Length: 288
Ligand code: DGL
Image (cartoon, rainbow, N blue to C red; front, side):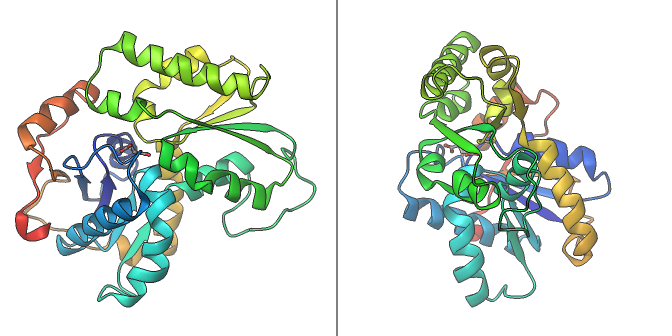
């Protein structure tokens, strides 16, 4: 049983790819709808909510939790992996993974384990755009990790402060399209009109409006969308660490959807993005 955590609906874009890729695996998804959006919250709050989410998923029997959220990964993955987990009762038996690593691997064509430039670098002077929440962009994690491996790549970041919240609130397509168009225009102003070689949609909510990014970005720009990249990377991880995939709970469905919010509202909203999706249930207070 594998846990997937997001601030709200966005991580379901990753969950869908995982559910397709691993037909024999059980998943528990937890959306922290009580606190969404995370994007403009202070870091200490995000770390706190993500830790609570991981603990809840561990308590439900998941030994591996994937942070299917860039904001959670950029802000909380390091403190939780390096400080909290090793000092907790879950040390050595449970793990937390983020989704920045597979994205940086794809953007740089360099394995995560390689943390210094390898020459010759095929893509070393490209321009890479990163779109994300305010907190993801402020964390600087994407440019830091990309330039460690490919120092000559120019990373141009663009925060899209209102986008995840608008997607989460189910705003109409023309409004979402206007927000995406404005974010892309701001990004292109930063590059002086030069089309980026690749664009990272660095928020798991954005694949829900990927067609809008595609339309507004120059056709030259290749979109790096995370769901399949993350599924590829998890497949590789589970081959190397099969124990994390080994638990299951026969009394539960293959994909179980939990929320810290109001289940009926969350289920209704989720269907906008994933019409055949199952109902959410509320996370029991004992697990909060
Ligand atoms: N889905 C999230 C991400 O990937 C965060 C959206 C939010 O809560 O602001 O960054």
